[in-house]
Length: 361
Ligand SMILES: Cc1ncc(COP(=O)(O)O)c(C=O)c1O
Figure 1 (tube, protein in one colour):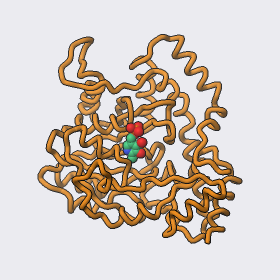
Figure 2 (cartoon, rainbow, N blue to C red):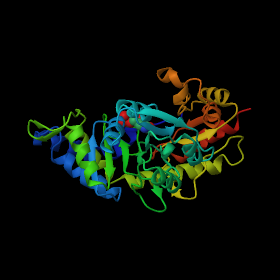
Figure 3 (cartoon, rainbow, N blue to C red):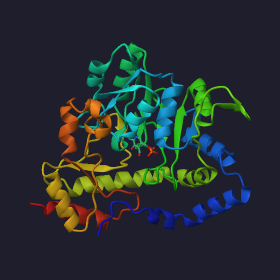
Figure 4 (cartoon, protein in one colour):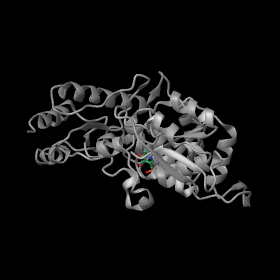
């Protein structure tokens, strides 16, 4: 039996650290935007080699708030890949902007920079590259386009904690947005998110927006939101952050084992772009017989998932885009399959999954 993900293994390994962090927070008696949140913001900014981190309620909220803080206004346009989790598009919608979709690269599964050029208009105010499955988008090409057209770049880094671009963890756009949903490379035990940036003004605006636009107690200078990280989640994230690099290394090792074991199998394994280090939030293979393969693996006791079966422009929620066509995204949505991947996965589980794939006819 190979589970897709088993979060309890990680908890068991660091039970004492987590239990202490929780008990310590309960004993302190502060629960929202307190010392632990401030400490985590400092630590996570440092981890990302950035100046500022603003913790918020979720990855979706990080994107929404970052877009507003970067100056995106109603009726502006935000370009993003159609192959992403729907939250990327919803966040633009919450900011009042129109999502404009672009196709992806068949190698990296991230937005195709050439397609961004075709989608740019006078109204484009932001580009949202999604670092899909844990791998940076082609940021040099994207920042060059953004520079030429004077648009903001808000990175959707919700899947890429611990990834590197040119040997460095880095915020390359105006801001990078993270999710701490429990399954993420760095996940808490509830919802959480963060905006990481080198822009002091953007950070200040984001801090106002996450907390009712409050400058001083009960003094509200803009209309903000309630989107805050709580102290319990911050304390848990602080404990976990110390392990993030080693977890990413374990994910990379598991990916290398899969690559080796699947070398002769009739599937396409993931490609690492030359510019960076993949953090393998997900290990995604491709098969022309995906649905049959998934059934076969299920029968053999292997859990798999599809990230994601419907590109955003084909979702009912975005019905006004349904007639658009993005051939690469539409093709790969029918072929992709995410295999079990988490730092604690064992070599035996990996060979069990690989053998099950190799026995597929
Ligand atoms: C690419 C991407 N964007 C945005 C989000 C939204 O994050 P959250 O679930 O924390 O709101 C997620 C995660 O679920 C994601 O994978």
